[in-house]
Length: 374
Image (tube, rainbow, N blue to C red):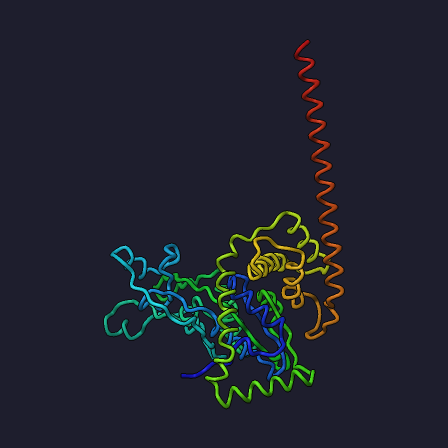
């Protein structure tokens, strides 16, 4: 059995690991694009993430790994089986699907089962990659070399959590909720801006230059290649603890609250960077809630919003790849303080207006009452 390099054994690249973890907490955030040079642990991190996630309970024999307790999200076959009696279930590892660059639309979304169509004259759906990746991790290496239409399909499913197939007389809808991870080397070409914006998070990674950290990477990789099982065992506790934190955060996510001031702060922050559209605002809110859930809280803070903006804004700003000067931490923190100040001021003015309107209404009511008494 092939042993996967542990996620917790990856040295550095904290922002990349954080983006992956938060998408694992709430896959509907919309995916991670990892841009960087060769040999910076992009694919290692994606595989390691899937390996540390807890096993899932799924319906036996279901190609979509349907959750038996999610009645509304069952596929048609599981729904019919449930109506006829109990659904047999079992535990299975979190799926990890590696999509090849040559993948076609049929391979991704699924298509007509030709063999059954010829042998039995019946129309049957043959599930594709999106079915196999449900409740798991879908990794696309060199995503910039993939057909734009296929990338669009992946992003649509990642955002909606469902795959809808209407073709060749087949009408199928099945759950497709997965962590989408794309990686690319900008030297080989970039994604079109429309597709780049569809990725919720984008992280630029570069090789580590600190000699001590590079030595640590070398030592760990050498130990892993010499004895993968023993190396994995050394990090087993850390992997288990991280997996449990993600599992707990998933359960807590829906309980994380926010207020109108938080929404105003997010809107003011994205507006200060002149970001096109409103997708960044939505992504920041989802990410901030995931960050709070991962830290065990049921409310978001300015720090959550700031950390979310670090992942959601860089690739949506009008700049060239790897120009970090376009979003310096100091600039982001300064804009964040200004956005929060604007939110506080806006709500003070709104409260004053409401208080004045209330006083005016009370005075008017008093005059009306006095007139009536006469």
